[in-house]
Image 1 (cartoon, rainbow, N blue to C red):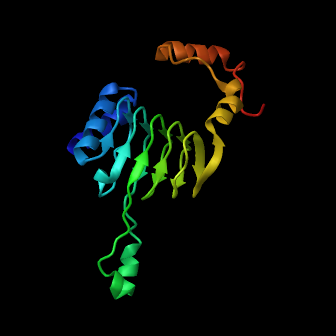
Image 2: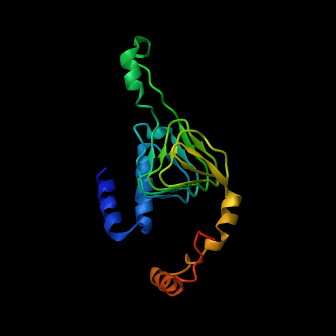
Image 3: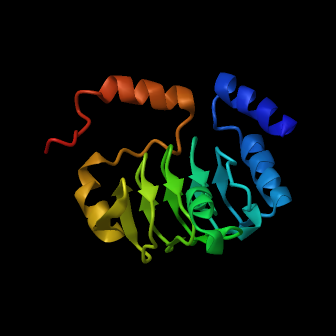
Length: 185
């Protein structure tokens, strides 16, 4: 927990591109019991009270503010109402497939399986499972598109900047801002 707080402050002041942050965030998740694949990037480590119920595939990005919830706290109310549920819980495993991106501030609820090659839009509340190659978003999340349609739809927006240094990227964008294609096309 202390390491998480320190890394969170470091992340706030120096940005999230530091591979050491990924390394420690992933190590923290594994120490909590989360099963984590290879090549992942974590900017958040909020893995609920049963982290051992969470399985994350290879090449998964979990962005800032993402929360995994493995139990339904609403049972607190039901337990108070009906004696037959006095000791009951609703608990579910969460499985994230390979090559998945989970956008900022999304919430993944118990019993959810997100298939490989999928994207979860920022702010989504994922209440059910989705097949591979899905683009999902909303509250509750629903399928918006498939990965191939997403690639085709956004083709005019792609700019090749990943091979550039941060400085070169900034210069390129500033010099070409009027040439960059925007979503209104």
